[in-house]
Image (tube, rainbow, N blue to C red; front, side):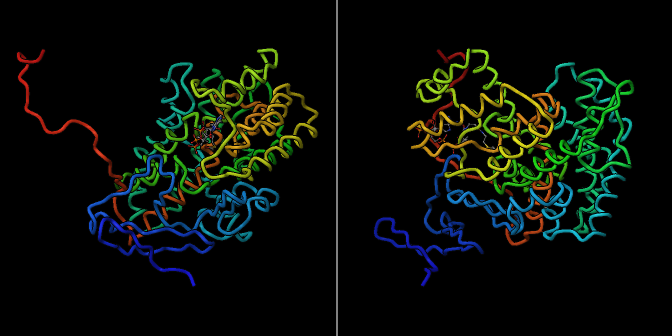
Length: 431
Ligand code: ACO
């Protein structure tokens, strides 16, 4: 029989704490009333063992390497769906019918344009501005141009804002790239699907039309699907936390983009390429980089290895590695970095340090190599991650808003370790 309570003893007193169970075996000790009843808080830096919410969007089992969106295995979705279909699933909880998908796509076409005034934003960033900073800033500014979302939110349906965000973020991403290389902007086409449109806006030129290859479209769909949600990771928790203060969806997503930017999170796909290039330029001295990563006096890490939750393998990495091999074969491509990546993985898989700590390639290890093959520049990789993660962020934000029972601002506590209360010292007496 499963227990309904955990007991906690502090000194002579015993407390009963309710146990909460999820639909697929997750179990948690509910400590929400602990502070009120005992005066004790829990301490969990980095939220290693803290559930911040209940959610019905994504299930993952880090020990078994399972990842499901709304109950569907990531392997099935990556094999059979387009990104738009999966975005619909994540946002609405069900796979769309033919008509539902058609109307979702129409919405995305309808909202793909940016307000023309926003185009000026791109002129005022310095030439080497990071695309992630442009993305975060511009997404935040969407609220100024489309403030009516507050009204929609009040009615509980964020359909228009969702379509706007999905469609316009894609446009912002492509425009920021075009501006960075000084090329004229390519506007979204009503004839193209989500991924085709993105690729066309990125690579079409008036003097050199871009030929959309189905293999590239298929690989892009796969990559975006694999990034579409990952429960309460750093950026998603940021989106929820910012939203919990009552900040609007655009501001919350913009904060999520900033959280994703870091090299320990979505910036890792970019950092992987830098690492592989370094190894290549260093006469493929793998052992030097592996030794650095193992040296406790050196902060260096092998980027693309390890994950907070996956401790056997990252199911996304498996699919991406296969997709990487497929696209290279189909398009008859070669990239020395792919060989470096494979050899590094092989060496790491036999190294006691990495085996003992369960460090396997994560989603970012091979994704950058595919993006490179598509012609996407390295500093745009985290932007690609953000495009993929968008439906997840929006669904998580909406779920949080709809959870009336737990509607409260996110606010962790702390153990204070500073000075005891002391007397104020006037300036002339400070030595
Ligand atoms: N290279 C070398 N050592 C590593 C690595 C790595 N990539 N990752 C973890 N370790 C070591 C740590 O030094 C630590 O060793 P210790 O027990 O001897 O102190 C142990 O493995 C556990 O590592 P933590 O940092 O405690 O694990 P945590 O869950 O906090 O971090 C993280 C997970 C951030 C992903 C980490 O593995 C890492 O920094 N990886 C490289 C960056 C990366 O690829 N990030 C992308 C993650 S996926 C994503 O966000 C989409």
